[in-house]
Image 1 (tube, one colour):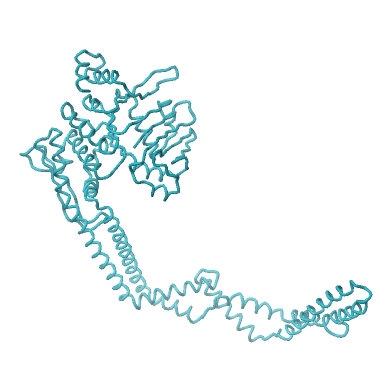
Image 2: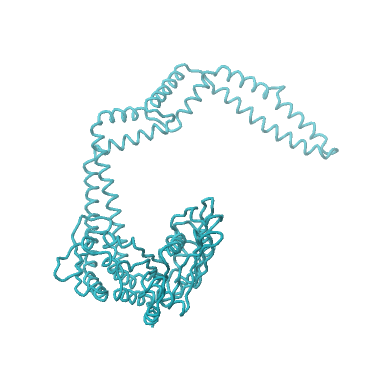
Length: 550
């Protein structure tokens, strides 16, 4: 439930602090006074697109903040899933917009993405504006109404998962079919390429190894000479190793009279051991270096083959050639086993289609099961709203399965007993559409426990007793653990509100400013009287206003 709304520097609103109670409240004001501005501010708070033009002229920043009481609603999971502090009695949503066009959103002072505040906002407030009446003409809206009353969201979620799996399998089947057909057209060429790579028998690190061997063999004489000279320096009678051995013996001889000699002798011994090891390794390497022109030619031919294949396939490494090889093998396997693979994928699609169809039919059964209940409730509400001969039926037609099942739904309507039922979009007037939408909202609100519902001039096209009945419906909705706020031009509806707010404009030295205030009893009488008689309030209008309020 919306407890408090705070607006700073939003279009014509400089500063607004307003509290909202539970139950049914009304907002009135002359056309252009700023009622739509307040709705715009709430919309901004709930995640609608921000525009720096919305900031009050001359200001650098606007802020919209609202406090909600969530104590009657189980929403803790949402906060836990999004790592946001949870306060069931005071949930704070805030949106900030700067003149530079930067927008920030917060939930309980935690910065969040716009999608998160939008997701929460959809669970907190439902704003029904006049343009939403057009939704009644859309099949998907009509189907969603039936689904809400059927309480089939879990079944729909399971069905959509199945439908996604079916569509994925069908897409894979069609891609595989096209691939096999294309491969068969190029089969000879593909087999030639595969055989060429197969015969090459490429190894992952072969290229680097060949390049090193060729380089070594081409410089074999220089390498062997250097290794031979190194071996002579390290080994022999006057070698480094022999000189280190003599140094070691000299130091060892004075260990008893010179303590540091022991340490130095140990270090020299270590060097001697390392040099002996190096000398052995150099000697062995020298013996292994050999130049064989036949082997060198074989290595070069092998490397030329690798370069040729890389150039042909426009790659730089053997690893990439091996990837091409595996891909070609996969394509050939698809050709050789294509019919069997395709048949298996087709069977998978058919099995998923059967599961989807079965699930769609069970959802359709749920929808049909609640259609009579919906028809009866809507007719009852519309009868109370001044349509005693109304007829309303939900017609179902089967369709090819889609993401929402196998049902096409049409709301059929007639305001009179002697006229043929037709699709509601073809025969209902603006006032009739408004009443049908109110009846639907009243019914839906009993299933979907939205904390706050705001009606923006839902009374368009009605007046008198019908308006009073609409007010009674909204008042009843407000008594069922939810908050209902109606923006209205009709005195019959305004008089039914538990609390009455007025929006008005004021001309100041700094320009036009919009205000919103809560009216006391006397102010409500004057406001409703003005709504009844116009700018000049008559005594009769005041008496009539008092009667309406009573």
